[in-house]
Amino acid sequence: MRKRRRERLGSAVAAGDSVGAYNSFDIVGDIAVTKIPPESQTKAADIAKAIMSRHKNVKAVFTQTSAVCGDYRLRKLTFIAGEKRTRTVHRESGCIFAVDLDKCYFSPRLLGERQRIFKMVAPAEVVVNLFAGVGCFSILIAKQVPSAKVYSIDVNPDAFQFMQENIHLNRVPENVVPLLGDAKAIIESRLQGCADRVLMPLPEKAMEYLPAAVSTLKPSGGWLHIHLFEHAAKTEDPAEKAKQSVTDALYSLGVDFEVPFVRIVRSTGPHFFQLVVDAYIFPS
Ligand SMILES: C[S@@+](CC[C@H](N)C(=O)[O-])C[C@H]1O[C@@H](n2cnc3c(N)ncnc32)[C@H](O)[C@@H]1O
Image 1 (cartoon, rainbow, N blue to C red):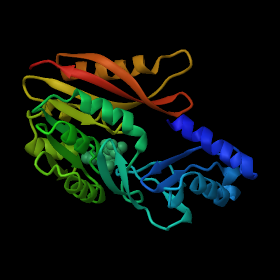
Image 2 (image 1 turned 60 degrees about the horizontal axis):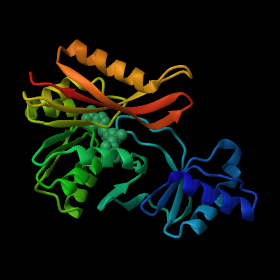
Image 3 (image 1 turned 180 degrees about the vertical axis):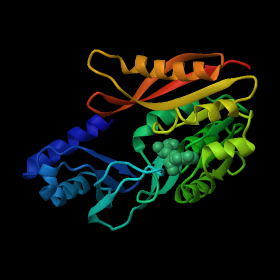
Image 4 (image 1 turned 45 degrees about the vertical axis):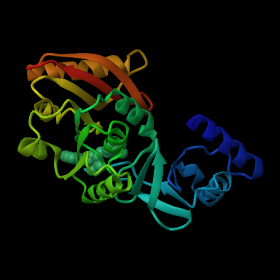
């Protein structure tokens, strides 16, 4: 899908002017977020014009001018063209997500992973989402599996506010419980031993929060979905490396487990990958 979009824009831009085959951008709601390389910065306005003429629904174009950083996983956005606002409403898999891209993390590139996870959730499961952002995983699960209960945690007050708004917009107030604060502190104070499944969609912290995640699971066991980064040289398999990292960490916690599934979520740079590891923890 992304590949097709890239090709279309590439030819549109190259045909009409000197912008070249610029092709790296995401569309969130009606806002396009580009990554313009330094050598193309002078063409930013032309690139924005090309995006807007090709994607009529796009009303604003920003360029990302910093890496995603900090506890809230935010990136600096610089306005290029269109309406000067960062708030938008994104539609995905039958859900509506309001978000301010300047204040909250959001990535349409996690769509495939969000869909993979909700399909695994069984009726009446209790799910804990440790790093929920504006609530995408949590709300999609609640919409698709109405008998599930999802505890949805985020430490960013803005993301929490949008999560509350999105719970209301998607009419799932009965089965998504929004919680503001540090995931570890919330688990310790109120979510011990209650979950069938724990989502950890924050590769920077998932391994550090693994003991807390394990303590969230019911004594009857359950699933952990652990995101992490791996570097893999040409001769190495990133999936094997990720599986080994999680295996070592779970061994050190003394739990009985298996790791039946690993997949690359996306490539984050040459030889760098974001992966998700599914681990099943057996009854304690
Ligand atoms: C990569 S984003 C997750 C995005 C979300 N799952 C989605 O699908 O859009 C990670 C989120 O974790 C939150 N976060 C970071 N540290 C946290 C902590 N200690 N406890 C709870 N949430 C935290 C950030 O505010 C951010 O919204």
